[in-house]
Amino acid sequence: MKRRVKLLFPQHLVKEPVLFTMAKRYDVIPNIRRARVTDEIGEMILELDGDEANLEQGIAALRAQGIEVEYIEGEIFDL
Image (tube, rainbow, N blue to C red; front, side):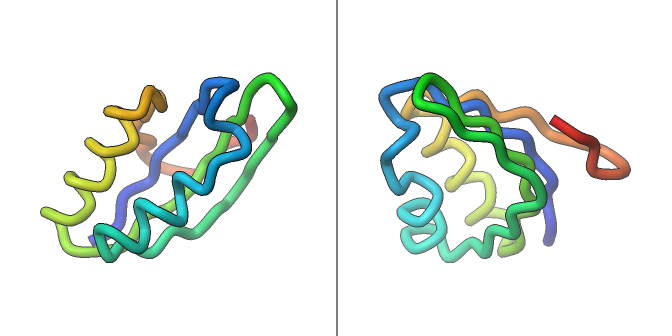
């Protein structure tokens, strides 16, 4: 199953490997489509591929860390 999401990282997580950790822990494959990262904020649009239960757990883990997750329908848009 694939999900398209937009992530908004708070400043304290910009330099942390949260996407790698989520991918490894929940067996999810991320495909980064667009990203913009500064010292203050990180924005990322990506496709997540994996088992539906794993995707839900991975997304819940991102949200639990304070990352805003928004589902995207249709075409990938610019940040």
